[in-house]
Image (cartoon, rainbow, N blue to C red; front, side, top):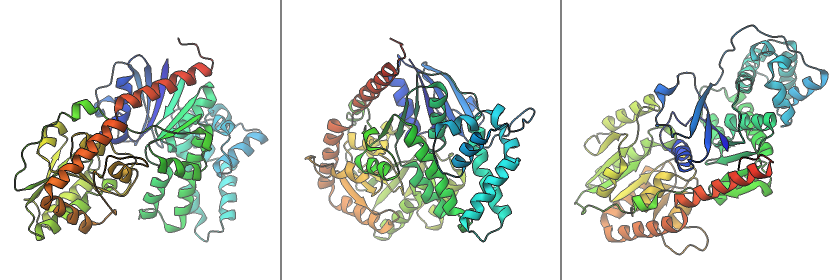
Length: 475
C-alpha cells in the first residue's frame, strides 16, 4: 500500500508540531510506503534543508513551492463555455466542485497559470468580483491581490503528483487543495487530519497582519475558508484531535458523518521513566517550544520580569530551535536584554528534552493558537505540572474531558497575560508538593488516554479499510 501525505509548511523541513507527528506516524507504519508532498516557500531548496532523517519507507519527497513561475512555452487557454463557468465559480468561491480543480490543473485546457492570468477570461472574473464587492479601492490593487491568490492555486495544481492508493492531507489550505485534486485525478480515498483549524488560524493572522490593507482582509479570509471547504467537501474522513475542533469543523462546513476524533499520543513508556532531580531553592521552569510568533515567547519573557520583581528565585529555560523565524527570535533575545532578565531566561536551542526534563519543576506554554500540543503530553508523561494558555485542547489536557477522574494537572490562563503566568509560577514555587501531585495526575491521564500505540492502530486500521473499500487490491 502506498500513501501520499500532503503537508504545508512543515515536514520534513520544520521541527516539532505537525512535522514531528508526521515523522512519528511514518516511522511507526514501516510496512506502508509513503510519498511526501511538501508545500514550502521559495527559500527551501531540498534535502539539505531536511530536519529529519527520512524513514526507509519514504520513497520520495516532492517539494512544491508557492507561486513558482512556470518554465517553457506558454499555452493559450482552451476552455469551453462550461469550463469557463466552472473555473469562474471556483475562483469566485462559489462552489467546490472537483471538476474545476481538474480544469485548473490541466495546462492543455487552462493554459499555464501565467498565461491564464493574462487572459481575458481571468480579467472578466476579477472585474466581476470587484463590481459585486462594492469596494471603493483601486481596481488595479484589487486585481493584483486577486491574481496573487489564483497564481498560488494554479501553480500547485499544475504540478506532477505521485501515484498512490490513498492521499492523506495533514491540514486544509493548500495541502487540502492538492489532496482534493489528487483524489479527483486518481479516484482514490482522501483522509484529512487537522491538528489546528487552518482557516481560523489564517483568519487570526490576516486580522493582525499590517502588510494586508484592511479593505482586502475580508477577501483573503474568504479565500482561506474556501480552500478549507474544498477539503471538507472532498475528504472521505475528517479527523481532528479533540471535540472542540470537531465542532468548529462542522460549523465551517464539514458534514457531521465524516467527522472523527483521534487524539495525539506520545511514547509514554520512555517519558514516564524520567527521574526527577531533587528540587533546589530555585524554581526551574522549562518551555519546550519553537521560537515563533504563534507560540508567543514574549509573554514568557514579560512574565519573567514580573517574577524577578516579585523576588521569586527562578530560571526559565527555553528549549527549541531559533532558526525557523530568525527575525522573531532576535526580537525575543533583544526583549530579554531590554527587560534586564538575561540572568533568568536562557535560550538553549534544539536539545534532547530527556536531558532537561529531570531538572524542571514546571513547564510553560504561552501559545496564542494550538491544536493538541505534543510537548504538553510529553511533559505530562514525565510527571511535570503545566501552566498553559486556554487555546486548542490545552484546557482539556489539564483538567480532563467529561468523565475524567484523574484531577487537575496544572493551570490554564488566558493568552497574552504575563501577570497570570507569573502568579501561577509563584504559586508553584510556594506550593511544590501540591504542584508535584498535579504532575502525577497528568501522568495518569496520558497513560490512560494519549499513548502513541493507540494512534498508530487507529490510522493503520483506517488506511486499510479505506483502501480495501475503494477496490484496490494491495493485500
